[in-house]
Length: 438
Image (cartoon, rainbow, N blue to C red):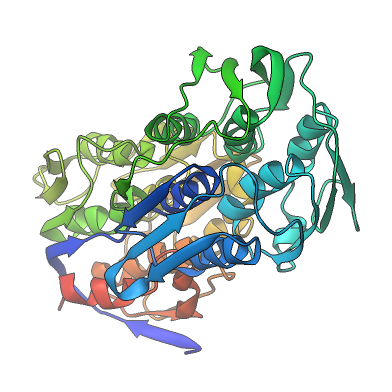
């Protein structure tokens, strides 16, 4: 489908059961593949990114049974050594697959080539490679230094000193190191990782540590600058037997925002107060904007806006802890009564597209005044939204999902390339249709 016309809608009501979290799904798939024992994973996200990880693991010889219809996968772990020691892996534009697999394969002792789509070849990976080379890993760039494609060669891995990694570009680099380092052996039995500069997206590291605990590995941390990882060798991970993936908190943000500026109530199930995902804090932003939010351990409901004028309050917000859900705040800003400023969003520049540029460009089509900077975005809503805007999505799932919400402002909107939501939420528009009403 080349485009999808939505709206005009005036109200959002209903309940949405969320698909599994992409961040949790791909981490659990890799940990289960590296572990000793059999792991059954329920509520596994069925999407482009998880299918890329599944395909890569199968190419590497990992035994698995995947039932997409039941959102279930059973994996027989490889005890730290993938059976296939030579492979060429196409990893699309899936950062949650590329980064941790690069690190894991660097210590496998095999010969591997990793590549993806053209955009993935523009997303930086040099900081991770630099950190892995501190372990004596042998990784070459096939093209531009700092970017895919990568050639990974057998190496004698050692960790005699703290491993350093930059924290400002992507938290996935640190996640990749944390998952991989327990599989190496050291004289002292541990490896120290030191983060240079400020670590962005800290909640995603918390997800990584919590999931590693489920597989039997405890990481200690000194603030967010120093991590102590036990290095127990190949058999360090042990299957928990069964694990259920939480609903995706980033995807929840679209429906929760809809429940705010389109009257509600809208409830999302599968994520709540008990979540390990940082994007559940999106609800804090909604509350600050005046939304009526009710939250339980495993569901969240938004029941419109508390203010008399029916407008959200503008925000000046540091988005370091909610980088993906922050995009939804930029859309909510269209329904506010003043300027909203999103700060500390520099990581948007190296996502599926340059999201700061893309968001600014498409918001202007709706009549908003937008100022963009290296790591910030200011949005002043128009008096009246411009109808019939044609929104480009830049092959970015979150652009498509975010801008669908504009149709709830009682205007029609056209979304180009709606199929790009397949990256994380293939049936998003079907779910959206169940809550959006004229």
